[in-house]
Image (cartoon, rainbow, N blue to C red):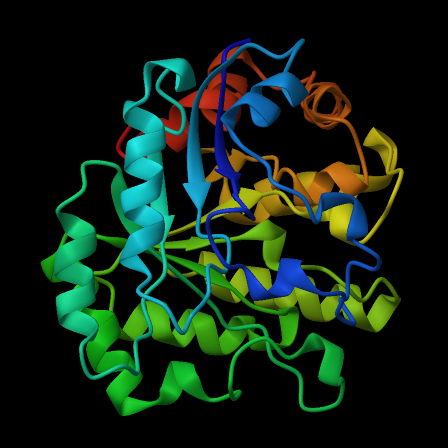
Amino acid sequence: MQIVDPHHHLWDLEKHNYPWLKKPVDHFAGDYSAIRRTYLVADFLADARGVDLVKSVHLQAEFDHSDDPVKETEWLQAVHDDPASKGFPHACVGFADLLAPNVEDVLARHARFGLMRGIRYILNYSDQQPRLRFAPRGDLMSDRQWRSAYRLLARYGMSFDIQVWPWQLAEAARLAKDIPEVPMILDHTGLPIQRDRTGLAEWRRGMREMASAEHVTVKISGLGMFERGFTAESIKPFVLDTIDIFGVDRCMFASNFPVDKLASSYLHLWESYDSITRGFNAAERTGLFHNNAVKYYRL
């Protein structure tokens, strides 16, 4: 089956600054020293051997926020344009600080690049656990200034990739419903980090809230961040629950490489998705592995 991977990363540690990769931090995914090295298209395609990968979408890799975020998009466009890259990546999602006074200028400059499709702003936040805080504070989705900038995405034809913890999903759903003109894509299966009965119930409840906003889609990905050495059987409940809640037409499989390389080979990940959906019909599987990503990222 031909595959479109709508969520992976590249980084060049010799040319650019990625603070989270420059030094160890207390990270919810554990020790990630194995990926603290340059990872380019050649590395990505080498990892993808054995998979019929035809297109991909690059997600912003936490390029230094103190620098101009458009530099990452400019670099990725040059990577895409290089014949050696074979057209990879085929689209990208960048970063913009939605609280910055020059945010519209940043969006306008992002939009000049043919590769650009949208913005991701990592909003993971926990009042109780410092290592789970990613956003500068926990109320950004309700902030008037932040929301005003969020609305600008529609003006530039951009979608929004949202990454939040399960306890933030209800608030994310309100944001989606309040501003439906911005297509929203939920990253990493809604990050089901707490695996006890209470945590899973909270995750499912939040996923149903998100799915109630009809313009929200979801990437089934990132499950390896919570389970090194996962099997198809161990991730099957999260995959099938997500598809059941959102419907086949609003889900897409993704790799989150090289972050999920800490948990699995690229081939094992896609073989797991394949095994879990073996009972689906051909059109449903084509949507999950290929067509839905093409549709929602306009490939």
